[in-house]
Length: 85
Image (tube, rainbow, N blue to C red; front, top):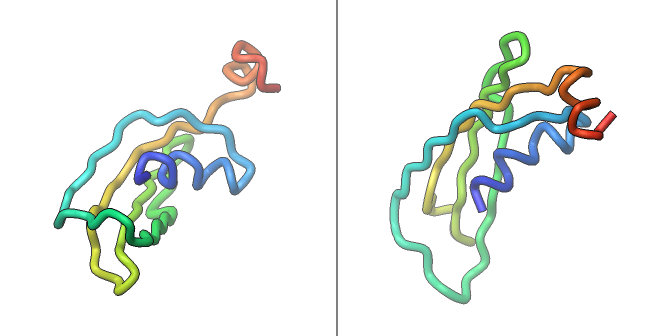
């Protein structure tokens, strides 16, 4: 779930990226049958690199897991090679 919100933050901003790296920290077990809230935000952008952070919490706001990722914005040439342009 963290992977999805980390990877899709840029997409929802209209930017096509690829994930370069990801780190996850598990804080406590998640309970089955309970709703979870996933939140992501842009921590920093330097050139084509985007640093994204995210958290996964239960309904009461208790953090279950946290993650960070480095995304690389695709160049026009990369988008064309992948058939995305």
